[in-house]
Image (cartoon, rainbow, N blue to C red; front, side, top):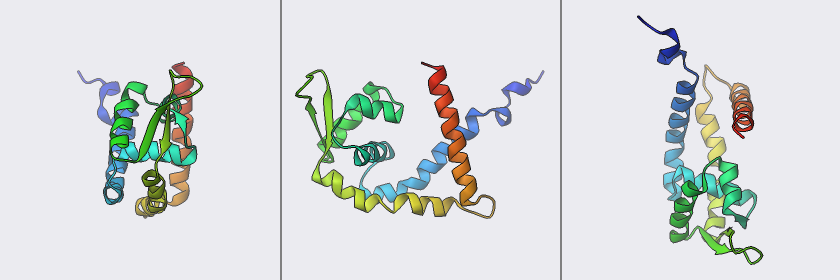
Length: 149
């Protein structure tokens, strides 16, 4: 007996998962040129927006646990992109700050979003549909975050 609800084609999670993996694969050539991974790129985008912030803030923005972010930050520090230091006002907090090398990557990375978007636009999906898809995914993410609090 076949269960319709268990067919892969009937799942919401699979196309979201597959699209995420395939989009990250599209990013890879651009990130390879910068010598960074996709998770490092995400951390850098957070820091380019707001530098010198606590690890917890980075974790919250990326919707990741601190025990996932901390090893990533350690590697980024070893590669010279960031500096981590204890907060002067609260030694339990670790602040993350861009180094000169990390700041310089921002200019090199500035063209990535546009290049990626133009590579995704096709006969079957225009830029408006991509923006609409992003907006709908953000609504879903916000709903799921509120639901799981």
